[in-house]
Amino acid sequence: MQSGFACPFCRTARLPSTWTKTSTGGWIVFVLLALSCLGLPFCWLGFLFKDRYKICSDCGIKLG
Image 1: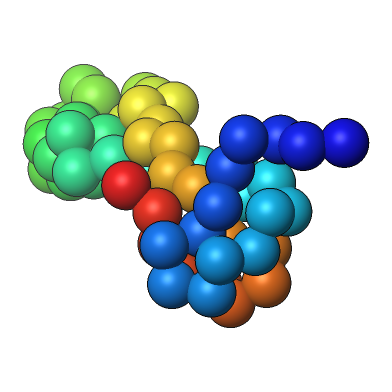
Image 2: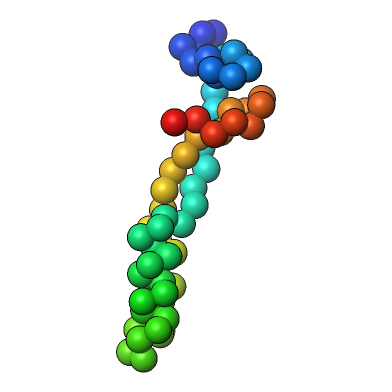
């Protein structure tokens, strides 16, 4: 079955894996809330801001 995907580095046809990480904006929200006295209990909200990225399943290169 063809997926229509080809890794630009290793040319595999396997679909890439999708990963998430905390975005830069999320880290900024975390630091600002952690530094404020009233926001300290809510600083974890910064970790809800996520960025998605794809990694090739074979060679591990980060894709677009």
